[in-house]
Length: 174
Image (tube, rainbow, N blue to C red):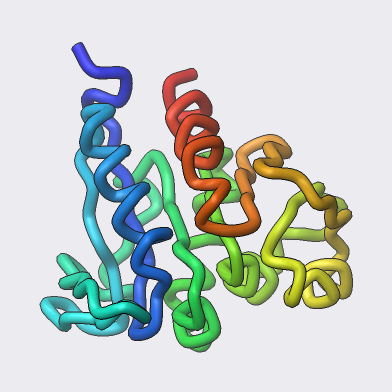
C-alpha cells in the first residue's frame, strides 16, 4: 500500500505558475498514492506555466470543499498573485488550515496564505522577495529549505522541492 493511499490532494493554479513547483509535487503525490486534482478559477480551463507546461483544472475554486481534501499545495511563480484574488480560493485555504489539514506553499505562493489570513504567529519561509509580505501578515520568516509549523509547510524555491515534497508526504501520512 502506498503511503498516501486514500488521501486527496489539490493544487491551486493560474497562468504563470512555476512549472517545476506544479509538476514535481503533482507527480510526487501521485507516486505516493494520493488522488491529485487541480483547481483553477474555471473548471476545464488550461493554465499555462511560466515555461509552457499546461495545467488543466479538474474543478473551479468555487467547487472546492475542504471536507473532501487532506491537503492543498500552492505552487509559486506569479500565479499565486492571481489565485489570491479569488475569495473562494482564500476561503478554501483558510478552511483547510482551520481543519488542521496540510497547507503547503512554495516560492511566491505565500501570497495566498497571506490573503487567507492564516500566517499570524506562524513560522514559514518563501522566496526572499515576498518576505516583507509574510512578515507584515504576522509570520516569523526564516531562510530554510523547508519549514513545518503545525499543518503549514513552506519552502523557498524549486531547489527545495525534494525536501518540500518529503515534508508534505510525512505530514499527510500521520
